[in-house]
Image 1 (cartoon, rainbow, N blue to C red):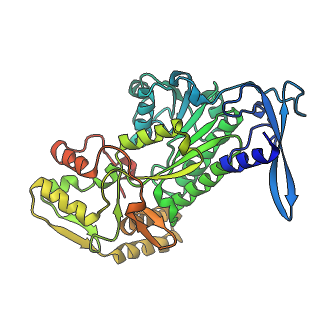
Image 2 (image 1 turned 90 degrees about the horizontal axis):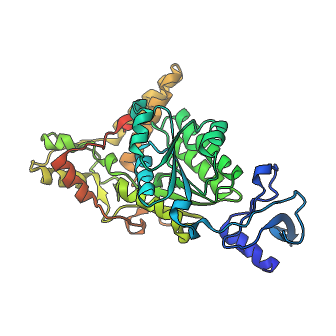
Image 3 (image 1 turned 180 degrees about the vertical axis):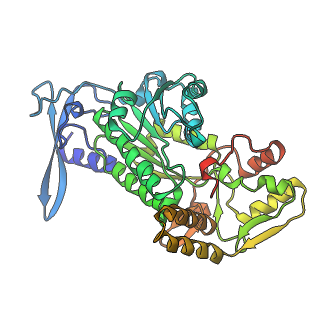
Length: 414
């Protein structure tokens, strides 16, 4: 392939080969080109043309000579050409709310799944090792700490991994927890994945990062930037709209005939939520579908967008109850946030309480749809749909069968 063609390939894929990175690590010298049949390595240099710096690839055939750092690249095919049982997929955050669905979906699809989890996981850390292993039968369940690179190296990545699926997320949205998990722990996972030669990284992010006003959104965005610029590994960034459970908080109240609480006129924000199972399926597709490589992928469920008032009206209809709404002014939340901000100066421990208030206000006033920056508005029709289960079907089931498995846990404040 010509030098120019290699340059175009590099720019198109946004994925640099792994050989000759700085700093040099002996474990990072294998270079793979999808579909290649013989070993090779590539050296990256930069050349300036008319004031513009471009990356240049210099390819060395290993049959002729070794590269300056003795690159010993082994011939490997794209993992997608292998049977699923021969593709090792590591799930970080496997016991989280979405992580559980993703892990089980990957097991069902036949992948060689490594489920990496905390010793005590689940809501409030109440789930034991035995329960986690029972939940993930068919997976290689390993226990460790994503905040420790050494734990990741020694346990999660002790054997070569082809794909990493990260479902790591802050449990509360608090400032410290957001940067510790949404950014740092996820970055730890990425960097060890790079060290050990993983090929692809699927990230569970959130559609709300497109208009970042909150701490957890900034933390997620900073990691997205790190992932997009990472060398030697491709990515798929999944930004779901909203989960069904986030809209389930008032189902039981409506069934009992209590009022449905909304902000303003109930039409301040809308969303196209996606079911947990459908989202897990979409994320698994990102492992297989080459069209999803190196893309940011906003995704919602099937059907139209729903405002808060429309959700309430549909629930009252399903429950056979008379409509009763309470409209809370957004200004009330602004006052509460201002109060906590003032108290934080004297009581720093209240910092997260103010942040929780901002999170509540955000979800009350910002739609979980694709944001059109040119039109400066959310666009439902521009929000991709995927899956089988609609919000109507979920509400029908919730009214009839209850909300088992939809507990909000640490996120109940929202």
